[in-house]
Length: 434
Ligand SMILES: C[S@@+](CC[C@H](N)C(=O)[O-])C[C@H]1O[C@@H](n2cnc3c(N)ncnc32)[C@H](O)[C@@H]1O
Image (cartoon, rainbow, N blue to C red; front, side, top):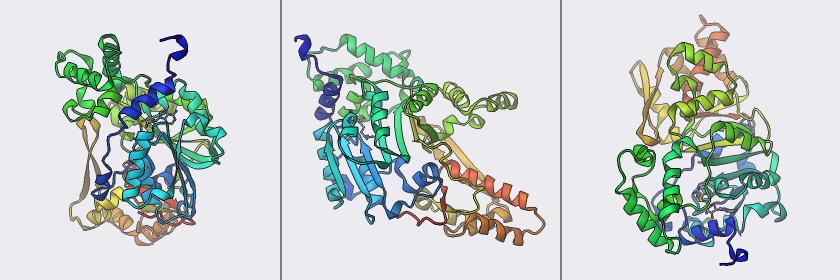
């Protein structure tokens, strides 16, 4: 091959996703289930990115950049099916786009989306307009220059817009990068991708227990259950980098973006009060800037394989309980698990909610159900504002001061919000459709 024929990074990445679209999805499954993507729940998006003030149902412009086989575009189009919102999808891989289109077609929503085949790097020149929300999950870390990709997205994002981003986490993927180096050394570059995937499967089935990937194998799907496209994506990617927390903060800053919040699926791993039990250590860590607190957590756990978060050009985009005009709103997850009615019905003095995180770690969310909390949950009916809830509680619990009521309510909200069971929307905003 002459120098002129060496494929560009974009061409190599495209070739991979043309050969095996990722993730593997069967459009027929749309008849059986809806996959929820953590970053794209509209009520959470409103809470974390627009201070609860975005009238999403009234119309907004959404871009799914590197949309792959369609998880995000399906979930967003489903939630927005009764609105006039503009939804634009772009991906390099025609094979992936075909799968995504078939999934939307199975839901009768294919024509709700504008489909673009191309590179997100070209978006600023494509005359696509400006977007309120951009989803870009698992894409930028595959670009030769992720900063250039992020800048291209920022160029088409409104100044009060938001980005739902997932990039790889460095420490959690330590074993993966060692395996990628191994396969670069030993795989036959002339062999087709199918043969390379088969060689990977054989090798990882026979690794010694001391191998770093093997030691942390529970952080990833079991190899026998991985589709070929997952094996290719994980072990044989031609262009793949990962970030530590400080690197991610710098990466966002390169396009003037601020981290708003981690996605609820991984938020727990960035919280010092969860990681550090020694009160003196915790107190020291909590004096550090947020970025260093989260960097300490990341190294403490060592298991973060993906960083999934919302980022915004505006700092302080998250809705606050201290705003009297916000309405506590139960999310789709809370509805799925009947959280509010379970809290109201139980006669137990405590309500307990079990959570399971990737890698199999289990945690429990516990809330003491005294009379005040029970009444607060009753009043949080999806319509009353914080001001009216706290006003009614002040009348019912006259022995408590306004400060006590505010503090107790805020703590119950904090606990329920920690796993996105409850979020806030401004009273001027219509609830988003489920
Ligand atoms: C790992 S997949 C992720 C797909 C999807 N975002 C998801 O989370 O399921 C990466 C996708 O990014 C696409 N991609 C990579 N580089 C791109 C670029 N420069 N422009 C547009 N799409 C790109 C690939 O074709 C592939 O479909």
